[in-house]
Length: 439
Image (cartoon, rainbow, N blue to C red):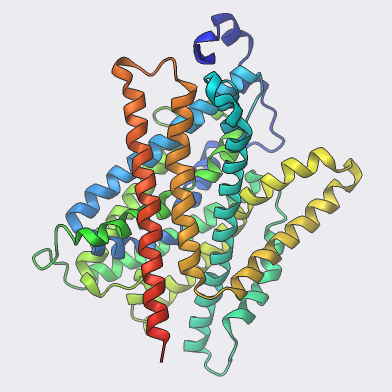
C-alpha cells in the first residue's frame, strides 16, 4: 500500500509544510512570477519563427499551445508531488532531487532500492543542463556585443574570447547574490528587455507584408522534431521551479487558479506563439536562428533589439547559475564549518562562473553541443521525471481506469521522443557544419 493511502487525516492536520516553512528572504507573488517567466522564456523566444518555419504555421500554433500545456502540467504535478512528500517526511520543503528520492523511498517496495539513484540522476541532469546554459549564455552575450562593436566601432578588433573575459567580472559580481528575492530584480529587468525585443520584432513584422497564401500550414515531417526540440528548450525552466516555490512568501499561490504558474505559463505561451506565427508569416523560410538576425542593422529600432536581447541574457545569467550553486550549497553547508561558510561560498561562486566562461571560450560548436545537452536534459527534467515520480507516488491511487498512469505514459513517451529528436537533429546539423568547413 502506498504512503499516499497510508497518510491519515490526523497526520494531514498535524503537519502542514507551509506553516513550518521559514524563509530568510521570501519572494512575493510578483517576483516569483517574474523568476518563473524568465527561467522559462529566454533567448529561445526569438527562435520561435524558425520553429514555425520547420512545422508550418498551423501545426506550429497548435503544437505550441499543446507543448505549453504539457510543460505547465508537469510543473504542476512536480510541485504537488513535492508537497505530498513534505507531508510524509514532515519537512517544510524539498528540492527537486530530494523529491525524487523521497518518492522512491516511500513508493512500492520493489522500487525503493532506486531512491539514491533517482536523486543522483536528477542532480546530475540539473548540473549538466544549467552549467550548459551558463556556458552558452556567456558566448551569446559576447557574440552580441562583438557584432555591435564590429558594426559601429570598426576600429576596435576584439575576439569573442576576449569579450568573454571582459564580462567575466560583472558576471562574478552578479552571481554573488544569494537570495531569489534579490535575483527577482534582475529577472524583472531581463523580462522588460526581452519584452522590448519582442515588441520591436513585432514592429518589424508588421512593417512588411504578412501573407498566409504562400506559407505552409504543415511543414515537412522530417523537420517536426526540430520544432518540438526548439519549443521545449524555449519553454522549460523546470530546474528553477522548486527553488522559486520554496522561497515564496505565500507558496499556496503557486498552484491553483489564478496562480503564479497559470499567469507565467499564459505569458510564455502567448509570447512564443504570437512571435513565432507573425515572424514566420513575415519572413517565411529565409529566417535565421534568431529573428533579430533578420532585422536591418542600419536602423535604430533594430540596434536597440540587439542591445536589449544581450542585456536580457546578461541579467538572466545569475538566475540560471543559482540552480547550480544551490546544489553545491546543500552539500557544502553540511560539511563546512560555520566561520568558513561565507568565504567558501564567495570563492565557489567565482570559480563556478570562471569554469562556465572557460568552457564557453574553449569548446568549438558550443551552441550545437549545448543544444544537445539542453534538449536532452530539459526533456528529461521537465517531462520524463515529473511523469515518473507522480506515477510512483500515486501507485495505489491512479484514478478511474488508471487514467493517471496512461496520461503519464504518454508524457514520458513524448519526452523521450523529444530527447531523441533534439539530439538527432542537432547531431545532423553539426555534421553539416563540419562538412561545410572542409576545404
